[in-house]
Structure formats: structure tokens, C-alpha cells
Image 1: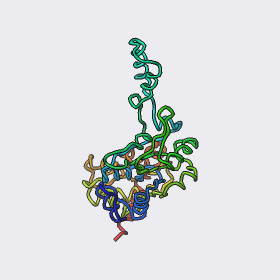
Image 2: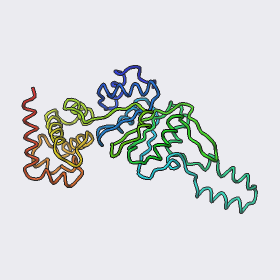
Image 3: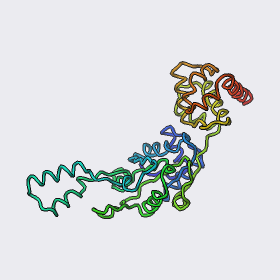
Image 4: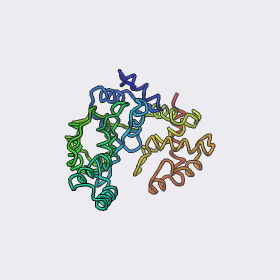
Length: 303
């Protein structure tokens, strides 16, 4: 599929994959696709940063290549590795047969046959469906040296393998970087990208998202679920629930044939929306009822 020609087309494209996208986010996605600039999405966990890359890949019919970042990730691991066990077998075989010179064996060992492509190298390869979508997820988990490497890789869209030389992408991939902001990412890398802060959605937007991702839920239950989660985010919690947790919770309630929220139901299913015991403990007793009452009062006051 061709790239969307307008901001409205981006919204329609993503909506077709169940991703409800506000106009500010759709605008920066459109500009990223049109200008060929990497897109840097920052925000709390669970607000839909990773999902937008998945939705775009499905909508555009492009290959999704995901580099999941973690502490200690280095450039070599993100780009390629040599298949060491296979190389050892080839060496043993060559020694047994004696039919290849050292130079021939070296050339063979460091060829594409023994190369294991990791996400960054894979994203540089040509693809008949068009430029792939490269998702560099949770960049804030890595360190400064890896950021510096990415700065060069995303500037030239090429990587260098000492044994094979420089490999340049014939068509730059569509790059989406995400960060949960557990630490600040260097300004030099951000300047290479278009930036957008993905915030928690407001009530109408979260209702739209829930209707798209959990259409089986009744309007009444969805309103109560969203109102409760929205109020829960105002509490002093270690980790506030994201949109992903709202969707998971609604699906859990549907599986339990829940029609309306009650303090007892909330207590039984808190593990779907809160992931830390300290947070769950804060909602024991009358706290869940207090927040539910507030949520219902807000719904009653809404025309």
C-alpha cells in the first residue's frame, strides 16, 4: 500500500487496524512518513507507543522489525552475529577433507551463509513490499554508547561489518523509536527525529479505544471501566494503569460476565490493571468503593 496522502488518511488507516489516533499524533506520523524522518514517541508505559508501529505495519503491508532494547545492548548484537557453531563445523570439515586453502576457508566462513542478521541489519535489506518498519522499542533502557551508534546508523541508514564492508539501505526503513522516559535520551538523537509525547487519553478518546479493541463490552460497562481507570490515574500510585490495562481489564470483566462494576468485582480483578503489590494494597478495603463512587458521580454529572 502507498503511504497515506493526508493526516485524515493516516487516522483512517490506523482506525482500520483498531488504533484510535488523535489528530496531533496523526500529524506527526504523517510528517514522519512523508519526510522520511524517524519518529520518536515518548510517554508512560501502556499508552500505545509500540502499538502504533504494529498498526502501521499491518495497514501498509510492510514488514515489522523490532529491536527490543535492554541494559547492556551493544551495537554488534543489534546489527549482526556470526554463527559460531556452524563456523566450527565448517572448520572441522575442511580440516578433515583438506580440500580448501586457508584463504578460501576464511572467505567462506565470513560470508552471508554464516551471518545471523539482527534487527538493524535486517532493516537495511531490500524488501519487495517496500521499506520495512523498524521499531526501536524502549530506547531509554540502553546507554549512551548505543545511542551514539544509533545516531550514526539513523543518519546514513547504513551499517558496517568489518568482514563484509558497509551495507547501505537501498530504501531507508520507516523508523519508530519509543521511550518510557525512565531516563533522558540525548538531545542529539532527538534532533534527528520528529518528536511526540503520547499521553493518557481523555475520557472520550479512551471510550473510542475501548470500543475498537473490546467491542463486546456494553456501553454502560465501558463507561464505568474508563471512568474508574481515569480516576485511578489521579491517585498516588507507583505505576498508573495505561490504556493497555484498560483494555485487558475490560476483557477480564467480559470473561467473568460482569455487567456493572462493584467493589467486590474490582477487588477480584485488580491484577489486570495494577502490577505492583503496593498499589494493589492501597485499593483494599473502602478505597476501591470510594474511587468507584467518584467515577459513577462523574458519569451521572456527564450529560
